[in-house]
Image 1 (cartoon, helix red, strand yellow):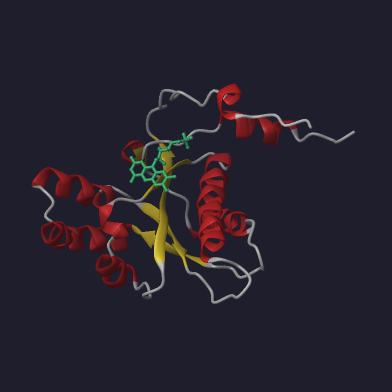
Image 2 (cartoon, rainbow, N blue to C red):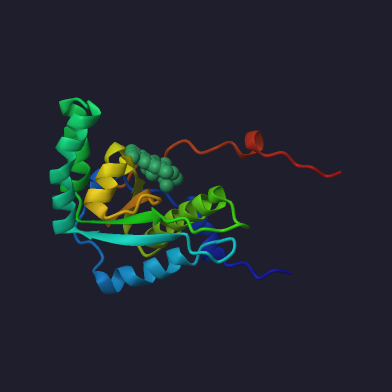
Length: 192
Ligand SMILES: Cc1cc2nc3c(=O)[nH]c(=O)nc-3n(C[C@H](O)[C@H](O)[C@H](O)COP(=O)(O)O)c2cc1C
């Protein structure tokens, strides 16, 4: 019989994100963050291509990014409210890790599988942070999805994209549980 890791199973069955705007100080320092990055990089990766990388955004970097958002918003035709919300995602944050989808040339592994692998890294980092007792939230937003912003603000190459900005900090308020999927409604059992 398998030997269950009950604590891990219970964590996975009850885990939930903490909205980024509710995260407060302290945030993990570099020594505390490193094991979480190691856990995230231990993600399924067809062909061992490592089609991703991580950019740790500390406070000053997040403020720099916040300063770049208004001109991106103006170029994209966003309204003042939308721009202010996107600015505050960066300006109010103290730590976020940008998980970068960085596909590698491969005849065998399709680009979409490399993208899935980058998403696994995002979830791996989110779960590692939550398991370590931090609050964490996977965000994106129109700024990070804009190629020019990603290039100027984060130094991404043409073929790279932001898969997620994983905000990490201390839990400010306990979030209410959100509705979870009805497993019976989304599961088909095939027995023959
Ligand atoms: C790829 C991706 C991008 C997301 N981007 C945002 C975002 O920009 N803003 C937002 O409020 N939520 C965003 N979310 C949803 C949050 O992560 C949300 O808090 C999450 O679904 C909560 O789920 P959990 O409690 O199961 O972790 C995103 C989720 C994914 C998977």
